[in-house]
Image 1 (cartoon, helix red, strand yellow):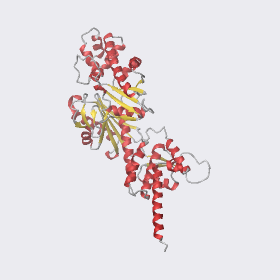
Image 2: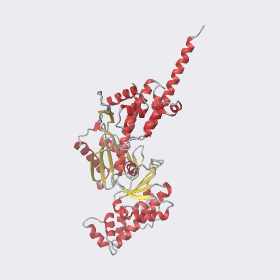
Image 3: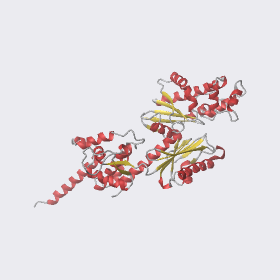
Image 4: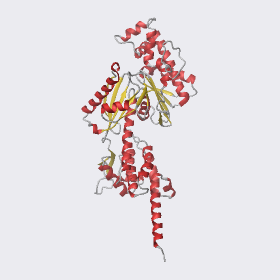
Length: 480
């Protein structure tokens, strides 16, 4: 007797295998290329066609980063799993390349028209995208429905970036494309310690939300940058020289309590190089360095397209470079470089020679204010010999620090930023020549185009990516 159950078992196994293969093809286009299918070719070509005019597409690795985990959570190869993958693919296609028509989304993603339409309906219901009539007229001239332009809904959430510096606290608010909505800044209340600094952040935050009629529920992510050695996982600051009472506590926890919303915290220099990679001098580069010279000295490194943080998040703490410096002023152990080469170090060096000839002219130039590093540079520009001597000493120290970094990381560009950067700009040739003498290949040394906004921009970008990543996870975890 012929056993039909065996046939049905084989059919079921073959069907499951086919579903697994189709789902694998969604993860990796290579098998579809082996089948000579034209759709994957358009899919690959489309994914490479990123709209460069968008201020910030999500990282290309974001989608693939969460696919395996999402696929495991779903029943392998199930229709629900495939549906989630398709919706996520359409979302990423619009995010990277929008505005697009439905036809363009199909061509780029390699998905069928019904699949694209279903995904767009889901995304539209979740307010992740906007459907608008195309501005261009039909080329055929025939009556019919107008084509729609599908765009990413950049106004769905707002991003808050906080830059806590030794001189100022800056707060920026943007939409999900990085368009600035609000910019606020006030002096850092150094004399009153940690509580006063956190209170000032709260004041700026409340002002930004009130003036721009933004609800707390509208905030998608808050990212703060701070000086000091920071554990990126916990937001705990273990050491900081530039802010009072700013050690051995979790800034992430403290700010989250004050602002009543989760706050991600990262070292200011790491965020600064991220900002430079997004909108500044490191844009489209894979290897770069950005040194902030102000109250302290910090360094952000971009290596092979990624911000380098090191084993536990303290990479780039160049202030602790143990350069051999004559140290009559008794700098902190292992902090010779920052102690002498920062703006505060220059001011300290002036105090040691303020009785020498030429010092009175510098004091007069400062007026009623204490002599600052910028004043010393201004005096040097006017030909004051004492100021020139002090400036040259600092330029030599900075050049040694830059050369040390270049010998290890070999950046394509070295960006100088921070409060003292404008004063350093007339001396770029001098710095470059000094660096060339002590390195094999000196990089191009430039002043930041972002001025004092590099850290804040980096925080904005990090916040935008937090929202994009959370959105993808949400899509992939839906159980429909």
